[in-house]
Image (cartoon, rainbow, N blue to C red; front, side, top):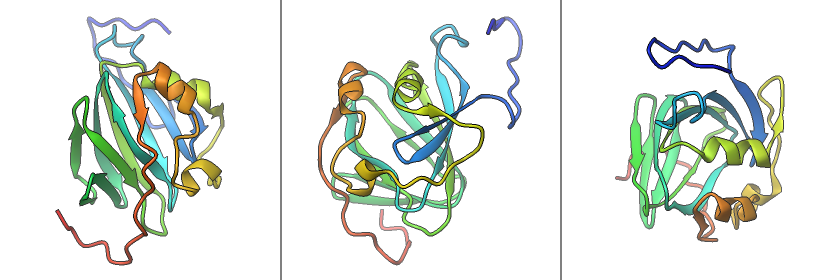
Length: 174
């Protein structure tokens, strides 16, 4: 897809590639190729009990904007409940994990600067036509990133630290 960076780029909610990967569905809205290497952005549909296990991105900022539901972020022992409208930014080298600890699907926008992680999602996942609720053994076991070989290629260090037990109350504990 050719993108002219001298004008606005517009994507509606029915545009973008849907990929089922690591227990969630991702809508790739803009790739690094489309932004001349400036950034990429995806929408994530995070199934109940799923998320991203403890890991470190060594190459890019990873930022999240919660648009529906609640997502719990972990940075070591720190636990932050992110409600709708919450923005979380993780610079390179930051230990992070996130999980939907509710019974409902959560949605969030994920921004990568510089881009590239969208390519890992495409390589690991499969193209779908709608959001799927698919239990995923690797994240359900909370012990490793399923695409660990791809993770290394893309500069992500898997910390193999399991999630703590799910908390029943979703009060902020920042």
